Image 1 (cartoon, rainbow over the protein chains, first blue to last red):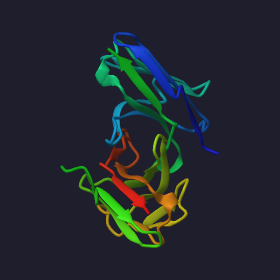
Image 2: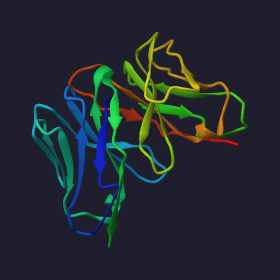
Image 3: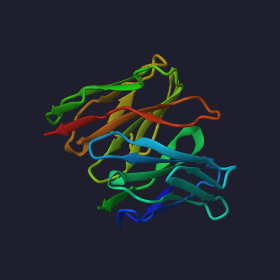
Length: 111
Length: 114
């Protein structure tokens, strides 16, 4: 069935380092891939998204890359800051507009 | 715009009780969704709707029911609450298929079944 695998489940970096989170998806028809950031006790909030006709998208310190052939996409955060600490979820759009979410990555940025 | 509004924010239920979680959006979005998020876990789709009068099951629909009589409202019903339904419930909405596909989430309802 439809599935999104996300790795790693936890990630700890020093402030200023880069962080990379990777996801793979199973539905080859998926054409939209958002990333959400969820702070403790808060709702998920969209931080960046990418459509299947684009290989890379960047927004300041955040970038997402997509490899449709391999069916995987990645989130890159550069110059990490303590306020980047949160849980990050990837997702892939499947039939009917539904999003299938990955299991989440808990990112910890140590000052 | 208020976006997606969920009520209540917190609720404690006894086993076997029933309740309705309310969700309303003012963005004229056709698509609406209900998710549950267990502690330390990802989001699981319970039910979704592509428009008024149309609903469909997600990954974990058992024990829940929904209705969609208007574009704005998408209530989630628990008929016989069970401890396994203790979770945080998020409602979300997105515009019709097109160039903008972002799902907007409400603040969530924290539900405990004791």
